Every structure is written in C-alpha cells, then in structure tokens.
Picture (cartoon, rainbow, N blue to C red):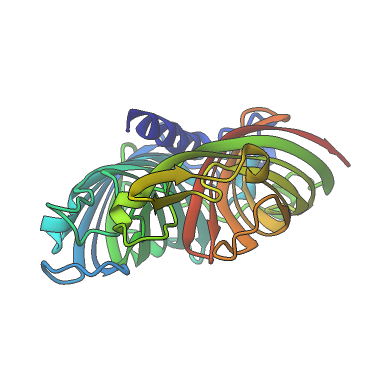
Length: 395
C-alpha cells in the first residue's frame, strides 16, 4: 500500500509543479498584464453535492455524495513565457474530503492532489476556468468478501484521484472571488487489486477564493507578447509498469474471489510525435508489453487444485498505437488507442484493442516521467504504468 501511496503522491506533486518551466523572463511590454501584487498566494475552498456513478450494487444509502476541497495555490504573474501562453493560470495543492450516503460500504475517503487552473477571460471581472487535478486518495473501506461484499467499485483502501471541472469565476473584490460550475471526480486502483469497477461523482460545485494580497484579474495576453511557436518532431522511448490483480480462469466452480491472483506487468514504448500547435501533439508508435496474468488458470485436476499460466515467452505482445497529447507547460495529458498485432498467447477473452489514459511530466528537455492507465474495453483497467522515458526533438 505504501508503494502505491508514494507513487501517486509523486504524481500529485508533478501536477502542482507541472507549470514551472524554465523559460525566458517576460519582456517589459508584457508587464502591464501582470497581477498587481508580488504576493501571489491564495486559498480556495469548494463544495459539491454530487451524484455517484458506479456499476457496484450498493445496498446502503442513496447514490449521493457531499465533497469539500481545501486548496493552497499560486497565481502566475507573467514572468515566464508559459504564464502568458495560458492566460495567467494558477496552480497548487489541494486536500479532499468526501462523504457518501454509501458510508458503510465506502468509508470516509480523503485525498491530496496537485491542480492546475486554466482561465479564459470573458470580462474585466469574470473568467471561465478549466481545472484539472491528479493525486492519491485513501481511507476507503475496501472490498471484503465477508464484511463488505457489495463494494465491488474498489478492492483496496488506496486509489488514484482524478478531478476535472469547468466553472465561472467572478472577482468580487481585489482579494475575494467566487466560483460556480460543474465538476467530475473519478477513483480507481488501476487493477492493482480486485474488484475494481471504479467510482465517480458528478455534480455542481461552488467555491470561494481568497488572495493573501490584493490582485487584479489579468486580461488575455496580447499576441505580440506571446513567444513564437515552432512546430517540431519528437522521438520518445520509455518503459513503465506495476503490479496487477486478475482473475484466473478455471474448469470448475471455484468462486471468483478465490481465483484472484497478483502478477507483474510492464511495457516498453517508442513513438514519433508531432508538436503541431502550442497546446497539442499527435503521436504514433509501438508498444512491447509483458502481462504476467497471461493464461492464468486455477483448475481442479484429480481432486487437487492446480495453478498454471502461459510460459514466459508467451506473455509478451506487440501493439501499434496512435493518439493525442495535450500540453500544459512541462505537464501533459495523453490519450492513445492501440491494437495488438501479435501476442504469444491468444486469449479470446482479452480484446486486442487497448487504450492508454495518462500524463507525462518533463523533468528536463530530454527526460520525462509518466503515470497512465492501460485499459481494455474502454473503461476496464488492465494495469497501471509508472515509468520514465527519454525524448529527442528537432524542428
């Protein structure tokens, strides 16, 4: 559990610092749009009455939840190129408290995460903001076949936390502003434990932000103050993996819970990417993957329980993929679709189509880290990918 907490906590810090790119100082002409104060810190509190979305058949309470968020953030001031490119965004860390009507089955989850707020000015006192957060949650009441059999949403007490929202922010004073919008939060353990049907909440969200020092609402950066964008090609290579839990097949009536086993999985990725506009890249490439659960079985043979799986060389597969990556300074969000063109063990129950949802954080111009979910059937997690990679790029 501590390894999962540690890995996901690092991801949360990556999001919070994802915009800290080392680029050139702002030209003097752009300083007119910078916030008035040099103390750019703020606190933000949000509340959301939400609807629970899950395939689990909970028996206690209704599908409703109430959530609170407490955030410490920093407003960008235009002293970096990316501040102006993203209309003077803000970023920081947050703490989440959830209360569910399904309390008996889900518990009292908490979470910590990094967030990024991307504003789109609409007037001198108002802006639309798109928020994204990524982190780790804990204190769930995990599935237990005896004491908590209906929580098939989460098989563990730790899960990753993904949050997204769209809201209207209105600046009431130089220190205070209010928010109202729609928010979605999703949790899953990425198949590190079973069961893992996943859990999400969606609903309206209201919030208040208080600036430590007076600030003005920055206007949209002028075209002449933005850095020139140079399209480029990139070649990337990386490796990632984690543990996973899966249900072994059987020739008998062995209960599903008794067939869950833990395995290892990893992938090696190479790809060619085109950074075709300021905020986006398209990519195509290949994955070589290893799945320790390939061909796993628990059978009854001559009255004895026998476990087996495919030989090591048959646990490998080759896939081709294409996708899109949305860039937020050093941090990016990616979505890829792939197809397995070859695999050593052909299991009709495992689709050849796969998906990858995740993020990258560039430590430097060449090295990056990744957190992603490799899934099948669009929403069914196969395994998590924690990894590192290397990039070469040219105009």
